[in-house]
Length: 142
Image 1 (cartoon, rainbow, N blue to C red):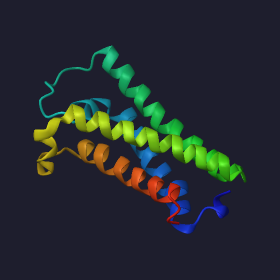
Image 2: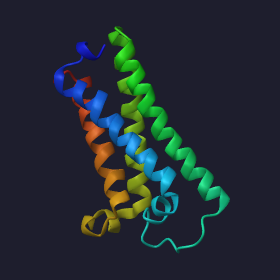
Image 3: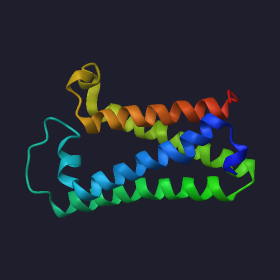
Image 4: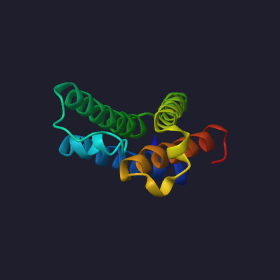
């Protein structure tokens, strides 16, 4: 199927995005405390509670799962309806991710990107890029 996608979305959906998702999986798996505490500059540092560790590892697992699903679907199907359905589902996921992230960060923090952590930047920039690429694909720009 990857050969049926136009060049730019094929490159993004089959290489860039899975790579970013796998890197995020690695970050949450190797440095869970870093990932948790850099979500908000107001989070007091402490040894992660078992619940925080579980949630962080489960989130990392979801990042890996999305990467694997994308790789499998885009490399195995010739059904454009299945590809469009996957891209649409991930579009909704991007929208939810951005909504929750911006809501939890708050308006004041959003207006000051120079104070964002690397994790904040990733939680805004990567889903925004993915959402934009999916939107452009779904409206037929490519």
